[in-house]
Image (cartoon, rainbow, N blue to C red):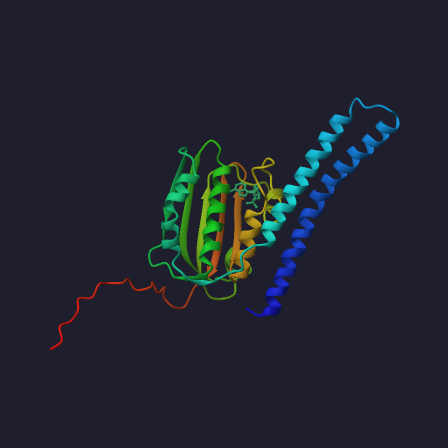
Length: 263
Ligand code: ADP
């Protein structure tokens, strides 16, 4: 990838981040400044009875602001992509224990792997993170349990399929879909779901970075993400990544070779 393109993507990500956090951070600052203001006027009036409460409010807001900047730093320190020819079915198979441990017993987890799935070119660690994030989101959308499926498929750029072809360049793709039968997203939530720091989860449970990181990862890999969701029925998030033209070459296993007697 050209350095210019990489840089412009970085700037775009920074721009998105800045917009996303500025609003939340401003709200927290307003809380801190407001509490300090009240304390100042109470002290000037010689009234000290509510000072403790104002200190607590300011501290709570300051702690939340610190947590926000920590998440921002973690996001900014993201690993650069290291794309490799990847066998997505094998990657998901390797995650099966982790995925089972991540979901509750009330969730029926199913993996449907397309036979003869094409190899893809992507950073396998980032793809693992993306799938784990999607499974966590699906789990969180089904507090009472339900069905969660991870499906892989070969996909072809099809101009008549508005979902698949919107941003995909012509060519073949490997798609990974994670579906749940959970709460679904309202149109409003769906519109903002990819925004950095957008979360509807309680404080401390969501960072609002999962889907935005997946979006960035797919774009940087020349692929695409797509959400289909209906309130009360569930959600499917699909990641499509470009097909790798060659095959995935596993490193050869080492075998003991008996010494050939010299004739
Ligand atoms: P987080 O999970 O930390 O909130 P994400 O960026 O992964 O951050 O998700 C953003 C928001 O999108 C979630 O808070 C939730 O409202 C919505 N969302 C994501 N995945 C799902 C899903 N599978 N079902 C319903 N809502 C979802």
